[in-house]
Every structure is written in structure tokens, then in C-alpha cells.
Length: 106
Image (cartoon, rainbow, N blue to C red; front, side, top):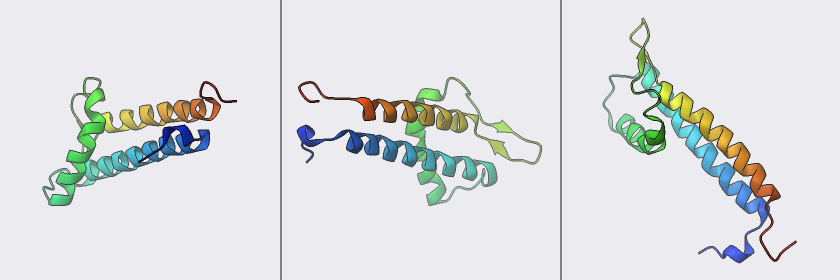
């Protein structure tokens, strides 16, 4: 269990960085699978889509459906938009975490 009194600024920044990198990696996997293997129904593809659905839930209203391209490929705009938002939010939170000083400490 984490002792929150012993968390340092770099540790918090690293946790934020880890979450953002993992989210972007999973969303990149989803974009690639959606682009090349739209009709695949295997266990790994199902797992990847089910795992990333949680990350995409806040962004579904922006782009409701994937866009078909002329060659039966699909561009998952929701995932691309979510990646951009997660990277921007992660950048801001990372820098805030590095500047943050808990009350009572200097």
C-alpha cells in the first residue's frame, strides 16, 4: 500500500506519465486494429476493443462512428481525438505534479 505522505513530486509525475503512456499505447493498438482488421472477431481483438472502450467513453459524443475510407478501412476518429486529449491532459498534469508542493512542506 502506498504511503501518501512519502510520495514525492517525481513519483506523482511518473505515475501520471505511466498512465498516459499506457492509455496512448492501448488506443494506438485500437486504431491499428480498427484500421486493418475491422472484421476480425478474435479474442485478442475483442479484448483490445473492450479494454479501450472505457478510455473512449467520454469522447463518444464528439465522433459517434468510425469513418469508412474507400478501401474498406476505418479511421477511428474517437480514438485519435482521445489520444490527443489524453496527451495534452497528461502534459499539463505532469507539469503541475512537478510544481506541486503539499501544504506544510517546502
